[in-house]
Length: 186
Image 1 (cartoon, rainbow, N blue to C red):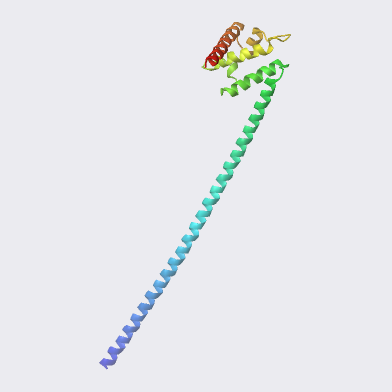
Image 2 (cartoon, rainbow, N blue to C red):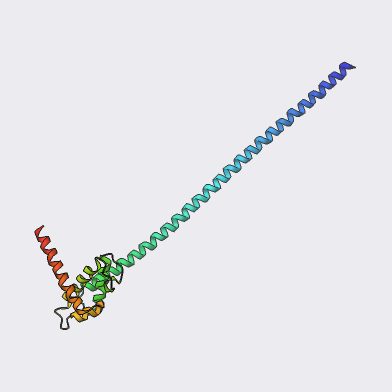
């Protein structure tokens, strides 16, 4: 009987050992399945993140292109405005005030100075020199007209005293002459 009991214990042990093996195998399979599922989930999450980043980049590109289009449109309008100013300044100047305002705006644009600077009180370099040259251009444009642009009229236009205009005309003419002499010597 002892032998049977030992054999039975062995079979029980064997069965228990087999159950443990099966349990471990099942756990490993479950773990492998979980790892596989986790790996798939990670891949899906990574793909979703990649797609989100790509969508974000596409949206940023759309915004950048829209901004670029707006800037091009604004620049086209500026260019159109500048061309209009140039055509007014190139005209005969029948409307003196429009011609003079167009000249000032064009001079400000060409010299990269803030709008309204030439009529302002500022004396910051190079604005006074540019203002004096603009005064000279206005004076020259209208000097042979039946009603010339007198120094009082130019002074009123620039919000200055007429003696300031006289001084500015002399300085601008001297600067122009000096530049011409310098160019002839070079």
